[in-house]
Image (cartoon, rainbow, N blue to C red):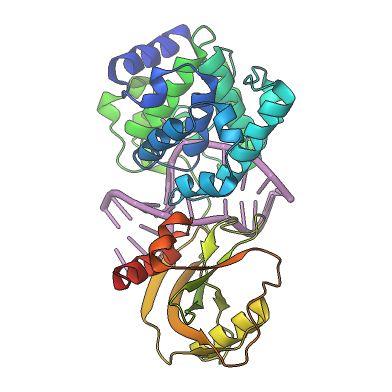
Length: 360
DNA sequence: GATCCGTGGCC
DNA sequence: TGGCCAAGGAT
């Protein structure tokens, strides 16, 4: 199936057209690791500015390990999938404690690190250490399913194993790093999900999908379930000094470690101000007065549901107990111009931007 | 195996 | 506009 001719076609193409990306200017496994984590489910253009800021602030694994998670999350804010940042911080500590700060160089050692799975371990082994481990990411799945005409559902692990066997057979064992990056570069820039640029593809003439005029049929992916929509109401509680109440989300939760305005999901037949009162009573043990109408409404799409977020001004009622978080996580009263110092998820950040403008 | 986990760009 | 997609991993 795979031949030296195939490998050479791809490598020649890659060495001719490859993008000049910052992580391609280094063989430092630490920097390769940072880039691979950031690029998980994330486009190059979105990751680029984060990579620059992150590697400037944390030039080595030791500096990352000794920094508070809150500061790491602040640098990660907006990039999404925040468990990546929490896991990376934990892995940095593992590397310092278990490996004396030297980045591990075996596949098993990499897999034992938090946040490193089969893809990332293979990527680091091949790119940073020149070891022949094939990567199988979304790009490789798409390229190989078209190249060999694999029509089974790529959501199935059996299909992915089949594709992994092809990737192993095709891998150039003398330049595994370039080969893996070439496969991904091809998927990202030529063999794209929609309207692939087949005339500029090194595999055009040997591609099963192209020869059958069927690039749109590969890869086959079974339909996704549609995402539910929720109404969310939050309270922006202001004290007598004008400070605002924010709460930190638990590390093991969605958006874990980020800060937010307290609130929650609207129940059936519940007015939104009542949602705010109920949620703040449940979460913080306080009684609050809430505006009748929200001062801002934000629509937002998460990975598996969508929300409409309604933000209400609120104040503690006379005689209310002070806020005490029932989940044991920190809360804080902060001035509007201090909100930049905390990591907020996107929908909440839109609220803070309004408040900071109003605070000027 | 199925589900959870963010955000931005694209059509 | 709504759904799809992006260099996946953990549970």
